[in-house]
Length: 140
Image 1 (tube, helix red, strand yellow):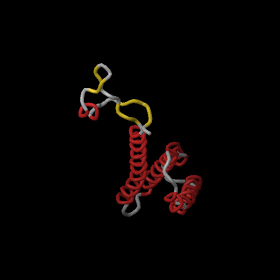
Image 2: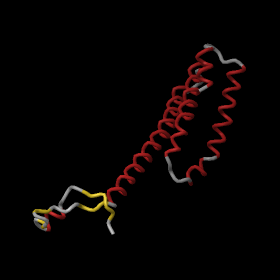
Image 3: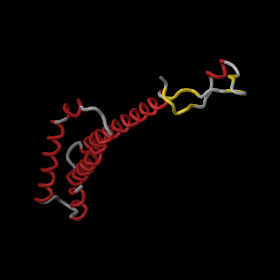
Image 4: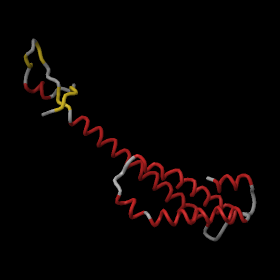
């Protein structure tokens, strides 16, 4: 984020401070890549969303740097950078949706159908088993 802000405040060719920010971003990126096997062994939790902002900020800094320097193949590099950042955010979003779906399913699995009665007697077995309403009591 700091690198993008610096580029916005100091347009044109990067200076020594911009190179320092880029160097720091590279060291942090290398450290994160080194930790990928550890992250893969962790169970997923909502705290994984904390990786999305730094990934997007780093991708933005890289894109700004490519826009200033225009190295050979800069368009290909730009698409690769956008692809990796998007893939990370999409993977975390999919895992979050799966986690929410599992949670909802576990909540519904613990509920038992409410009985359909007329004068305290079930109308029929078929209707009782096809009831849509659920109670909050757990099945035993």
